Image 1: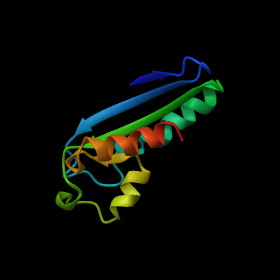
Image 2: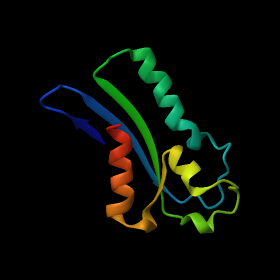
Image 3: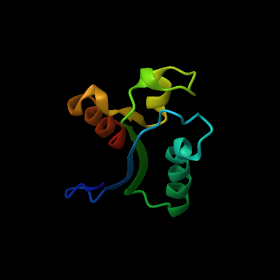
Length: 99
């Protein structure tokens, strides 16, 4: 998802991966992509470019079997849960994008 602010020229490039995460654990590389894109963003050193990565989970939080953290901890890692409904998880995502 590529967003551009026409007034400021700021760009937000977002990698979004909708997937089931029932059997993933916190060491899975996909759950760390949100950090890796920030390393790349820093290397690019473009003040008008923001990179983000999100996992949109088709698996409800209560159905995860290998995760022992709080839901808010996963949301801090840019894992959002689609079963909450579009108005909830999309609001969270766009809030994180423009933060």
